[in-house]
Image 1: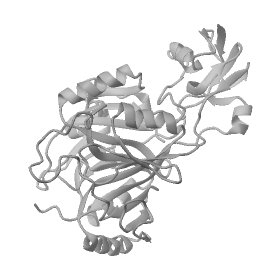
Image 2: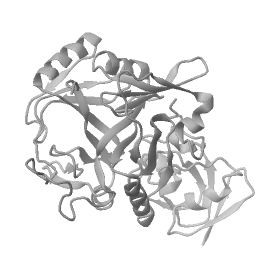
Image 3: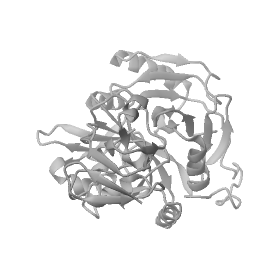
Image 4: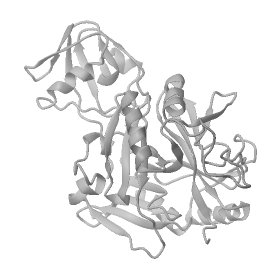
Length: 99
Length: 308
């Protein structure tokens, strides 16, 4: 079991290495602006920056992240799995708003 | 029957990041029939009641989205006429020779002002729906209708800049009708729904911030019972659901869910019958909740943002 601290919030979420960190982060969505969309690494709506800690990732769309970004901790929360306690920053929702 | 121009959405080619997961999703779970895998790894599917060889193509990629969509037209003469119309509209057209695309006759290929690659074609190999053409009966053998019990590919929803220009092409050149629109506070249309048939829409186009955005591909079900059955399977297979509700726009009963690469799919049933003498229906952005989802009167944040 690992702890996730969200920058700017006092809430601590808990996660395991077997579930995407989005599942834990979403529990605090009234405290900070995390969004969830496709949950499959495709839409980019749950982009976060891991500031501290180690993690693994699954399939993520090249439209939203690349290797350089991942090395700098920028990932999609729905495809990111904690390997230690993490500190994350919720990034602004992408601008792909229609209408 | 006067429908002798552009007939229907006949094909979408969708990018997927995990082909095996995608085949499970579109084949085993949704129940589309796998028809072929070509030398480039493209996988071809049809729904049971479609008569042409395929309607959905999956291509492996590092990002999801829509490679192209294609409408079938009545005959080759229509194709020739439409080429002239598209070029007069100001859009460059290239021809894909017969046979270059699997089982397909010649095609017109061009890019919409909203950035999507669109094709028109008149011929694709006829394979039928297993019932035959003489005394066909009504029900195919066990196992032909399966999974979500999808009858066919129905429409797609795309977005990008210049949505009004893309819609103008459909109205002025392809002779679609504007069935419904959602307008902003200045009366400017932001989401538009157009039909070439008696359905409430055959394609929808929204104003969006980037070229070539794909909102969803939609599949038609026969009945409310099949809608409930498909929804139960979506739950059984733990497929991420965005919304189950009824649209105000088009009045269809809908489920939105995502494929394993984050492409949005829709299944729907019901809706009204459109005739060319029907008035265009207008919804206003300040009434967007019931326009989008009339039962919950709530729009998930992802619905207007999450596109591939």
